[in-house]
Image (cartoon, rainbow, N blue to C red):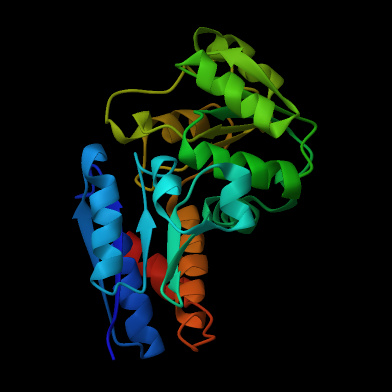
Length: 272
């Protein structure tokens, strides 16, 4: 039997998930096919129903659908309920269950690359979308931060996430560059880092020894600038790998295959 998996988003052509997941399944000896599908927002419900009808065993969800897809699955795991966002759907006993593996994937990656320096910091999260929601809860629960602040171009979205976290403050997007010295861990969850000549904020006031983290998994000028200013930098490759590993393990367990995802193989596939 061949298991069918997918990732849906808009845009999706840049995604490294198909290469990563296919390499992982091959290493495990699992017969599988993993495809990337561009799905416009207006077509999301139809796409979800279609994947289910076609017998897909599970799929990943990326920008801009992580929040909207919550309305179209049969149930939400605690991780997705807490974050208010889904990045992984598992089909089990004919039902679609939404999970959020962004948060655990992010924290595992950060600790793997930065180590214990990541604990107990004042945290600034740039962005308030689906990825930010999953990451913010995991940071709150697992990294024991001194404080968490949210900055987003649309302030009302930042305020909503801050209320949900019940421990976060809101920073105006225009003030981000000025408050950077106050934070020891700055996490960019926006897509702006994917554009070659734009930065989420100026880093001239960055405090040496601060951790600058970007979930974009290609090298960015922002991270290069942060490193030149004495920051500890953390890119998005590890998060992609670890959130994908968690998703793959859930899909395979649902089919009686309790395999551990091959992390090293998946990282090599992303970086190839």
